[in-house]
Image (cartoon, rainbow, N blue to C red; front, side, top):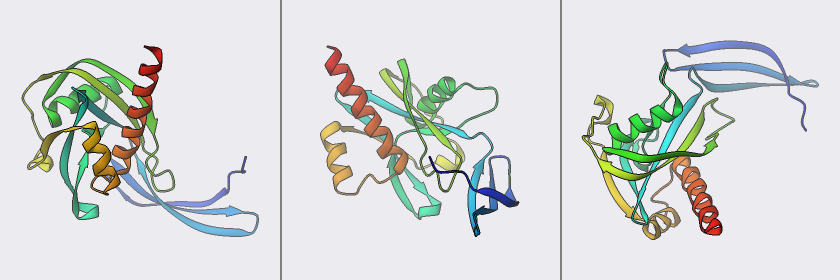
Length: 184
């Protein structure tokens, strides 16, 4: 196991209620380097896979940092005094317009461990029931669409789904489904 480097100095470059951009100077032996990264105050987020009838629902959302829209699973950042499980149910209702009789955690993803401290808890939601969507102002224009699993795989192969969290969540989902088949 590689030994951790020593932190020589650490500075906050920007901070708000959600994130802090930090710059650390690290040292290993005589080598020094800068590391800039996002430190999420909540450190956790959720991603929810709405699954039914051999398919999933994806949202199509504009992401300013990439200047494009992405097909993604619903999700969001942790909120004070709310469990990961409750946040998963809240994001499912708000972004996808579903309540679920069954919500289970199927894994955790570190989407970019060299750039951010966030860890995303991935949930699978099944036995869905329609409810009213209540999008936040920054989510207005977000579209929701159902895709069968074969179509999702083709979209991934063609590069039409390239959100790292969504790709990782889909892999966890696929492994979870294989486990279920083996148990049957």
